[in-house]
Length: 390
Image (tube, rainbow, N blue to C red; front, side, top):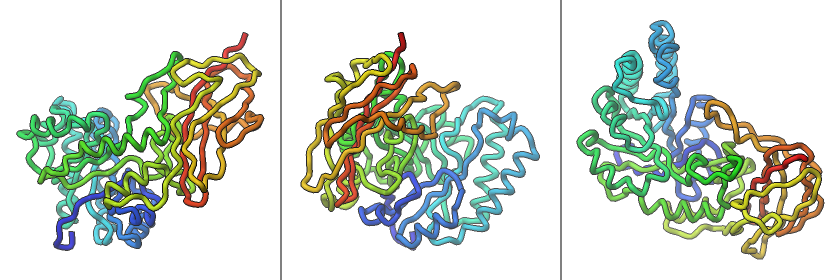
């Protein structure tokens, strides 16, 4: 970049860019082009570069997009206009065509590959200064073979979570598929799909302190010594609702930091974080843990307790009860934060809360968020429970 080697110290997300630059990050990735001008300008002001995501419909839905010449041509034309509009912005690092598309050898994918490559070729023609990538899930040999044989991308990107600890070995196994540069386009804590569920199917979430340790542990598996490796994007920089509003969020909606932000500062700069976040080991409800399948009758009262390490500047704990929507058809994700049940918390202090059990039957979750307002940090944990009527 600008004639010098550039190693990506990246984060998936598009907010809090000043804070990202302060802790040693230098790159973000977006997943769409909404408000792209504002994001690029903000990035430039904070010495951040951007891997711009160009979303594409899933390849398995070819009959609705890629098999229809007019629809496919409009998609290409729209992206041509966008590339011409933004290609000279100084914050652009590269373009990412699609996210976790299925690259299959099946003949019915022919028109998908045709459209995909026309977009890549257009970018190469109109903007030769910025490389093109696409993301895949892990290093699946079938998908990697198809990407290598049937596309003309410049850089390979992979979203890899729990299998990150196997990546060095997998890179050797698939080296004959791909010998070019590669990026880890997402890495971080385990997603809900990899975690334990309780008796009624609610996912069990770790505390923010447990997640911070996971970031630290997983970082050791990133193949920084590989000369083809260009860097990685930690997931997720900002506030993201997925299963819960805390699962992937390294920051909250106000930009306050979890312990994981300090971990990334240490990884990127080699220095300890400026501010320590509260450490929160977990929660009990009526002396039961999340694995105990906590079930209540409507209208009763329960007690929740958390265990924390208390910095001198620790302020207060916010306790909240939310209904759950962990079951959605067709494996959809609950990307909309639900409304807190007002009036549920009867009394509370830093480490304890007494709360009223909801009257309506169904699944719920109680959250505890511990704030250190002086340093702008917080910790969080939660426990699911179920209400069964008589």
